Length: 71
Image 1 (cartoon, helix red, strand yellow):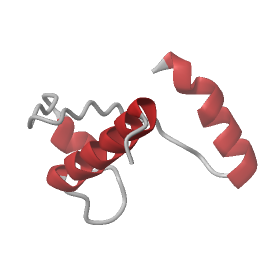
Image 2: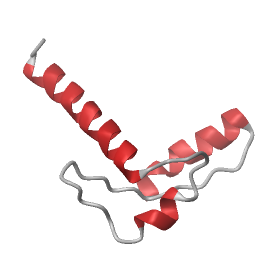
Image 3: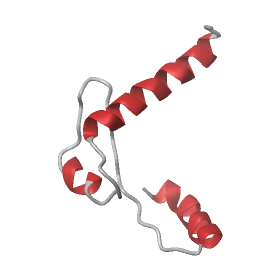
């Protein structure tokens, strides 16, 4: 979490608002960190763990395509 402190400070400065870091570890194979539900409730909107997993999978596939030069 400490490696994101600079990002937190920059966002607070740019947007002039208070931020909170939320630890999130999302695995592609339905690996969900214990206590993840309480952190997800802190995110505004109607966020579901399954949606976050889909976003993670899509992002991972995009990174792999670029790294392997697959089109």
